[in-house]
Length: 507
Image (cartoon, rainbow, N blue to C red):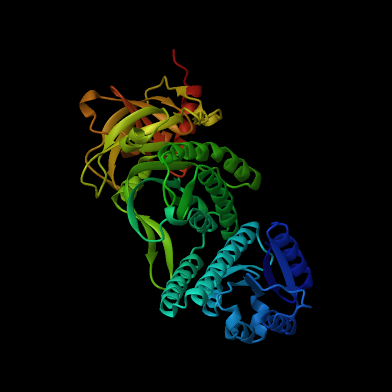
């Protein structure tokens, strides 16, 4: 059986394009109505059951918003007034979507807001919703047939009330989801994707671009938008590939969950694989940046596994699918410990994976606001069916230079953004564009892995100011520092050290 979709609009070219898109699904047949008179005539024919009509009863109606506005939305009211069309889903199509216009469309009775030139995801949503309506209508016909056979009006009324309540719930929930992925998952999986809130074990991912705020202040808003759109497109595609769901965009970062709304025994493995894939995809992001003349970017990722609350959160007017709980907060702390290019994961992540996970280092850190310390691992790869590892950096930033001159540094521990305690003396041993290896007196080792320090070169000729670093490795009396400033001061320091060694060769 083909589903009939009515397309109502006055732009013939757009209508023909949309008709071809709808018909290409193979399960739907679009009917174009280019005026309200044509729409009213079609309604009259399907209501009266005209045998000469070529218009089938609609499973879904898509109407142009601008065209409806010209008629003061009387056309929508005429559809609502026709009892036989009650429950037929109405989509409003707009030229460009925004939150205010979406709310206005919902206020006029739209179930979903789509673009005037339909996107592939919108075609899929139209098909799913039309099938949902047809199944409901067929169920209603079955109930009516049973009523006529057993003449139990009270039972039919009860079932109809249940059906109406269910349809209102589905329409209300679905129309408030702005993520096609979440809606499609719920429609496809039915009862396994809970519409209410519940506690369950899930894997949380949080990512963030390093120093993007300071970099974006130097860029036009159009360039910032273009860059973030490209970056998020790459990241979301990878997360979706591994069955993750993006919950929220957090400025230049994102929050994603694996194992909800659809449960999965491989959720943690998928999250690890996705994180590695995302870090490797930063090569493509930075190729895009180089092509456009944008600054190079680095991303940190944190992963955690534990109990969370997942479900619809918000108000009666606005709600969204969300995930909350201490596991999410702890994941945020784990992500904050990472530097560009790293994937940091909790002990719970390592313990819940099925495939073998490869790590480079681990440390126990105490995070502000958390009662217990967190055991963190730096992930470098995952085996099994995934067979993924972090790309090794082959650019100049990975080249270390041995420092054969005595270069002294003062390391000031940081608590938040404030210097805490006295500085620690250190001697520079190796340096690259992004990292340094220093030696610290064993009696002066209060610094822990993933803690932040402010670096102050003892010789003013090597730097005009201080810069910030994170300790990413610690072995005996040696620390590995990763520069976390926006690049100006640390780059100046690296350049000065290399120049010093060139001018004063060791004897």
